[in-house]
Amino acid sequence: MTTLHTLRVALIGGGNMGRGLLGGLIARGLPASQITVADLYEAGLEALVRDFGVRTTTDNLVAIQDADVVVLAVKPQQMRPVVEALRPQLAANRPLLLSVAAGLRVGDLARWAGAGVSVVRAMPNRPALVGAGATGLYADANVPVAQRELASLVMAATGLAVWVEEEVQIDTVTALSGSGPAYFFRLAELMAEAAVAQGMDPAVARALAAKTLAGAGQLVAAERDDDLARMRAEVTSKGGTTAAALARFEECGFGDTVRSAMDAAANRSRELADEFGKG
Image (cartoon, rainbow, N blue to C red; front, side, top):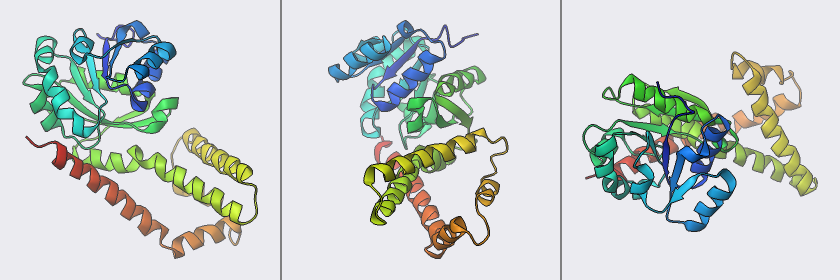
């Protein structure tokens, strides 16, 4: 049975999501010497060596030659030529192919990779950088249980990892947790701006907004039942200041705005699949 301590991982793409995954895997016991990162940006590779001690290369084929798991962390528009160039080595050692690119469907990735390669689609999010990520995973019926467990093992290194039953739900994961951190950042940003408009020092306003965002998240994470409505009610006294703010949110169509934004993100995920998954 493969364990995290014995796993050999190749990461194609060394950007922010790659860094988050590296940090999580190493923190949970995967030796840095068993991780190889491939990227064309040599200064970025040098930083990864300095920060994590991993192996690096500018040659994708070299990176995956002995890998159990190949993580694809490149942009959707770059994915097809990258995966097709890997086909000879993928056919030789049959690693798990784990894509963290937005939009691209399992069927397209599998076609580019060639027959017999197990493909799992994952949608992590930015808090993976600090071990607080939330990842949705999907694989079709052709992927064996052992390979699914391997995908879970890798992505759980960055935080929560859950499976969805239908691939279309990954588009919803993208809209919910994949893009979600930006929604909270924007709300905190707007709250700080409103406080400044009321006369508060900008640095103080930002600090209070940021700590409120972080603290609220920690409270939710500490709850066992995840009942968000109950938690909201507990901090909303009848006729109080919080009730006044929430009432104004509803008057301004906050719920409809959030639903519309989620729809826009999910639709864009599907558009990316149609745009870059052809051929």
